[in-house]
Image 1 (cartoon, rainbow, N blue to C red):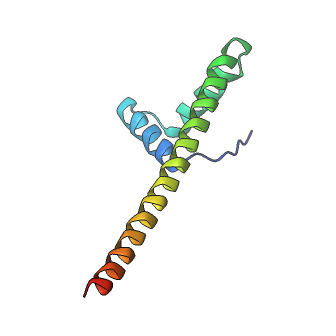
Image 2 (image 1 turned 120 degrees about the horizontal axis):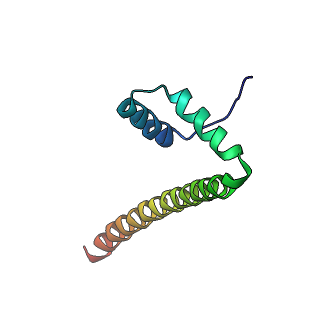
Length: 89
């Protein structure tokens, strides 16, 4: 059986690090997690994992938006400062 999915690069780096520490292959850990989550009793763990990753993604998007906003504010301040200097001289 072939399973295909996408995994965020930072999460993949963390998974690879864990696997290296445990001396197992990344595919083995991911397959074990998928098997764990397919047991009906473990659905809450899968749901929590998905929700946490959604929150992390949303926070990353908010962080990026804030960085863009901060850059715009700094650029505006610089422009205003230049204009103010022109008027004062």
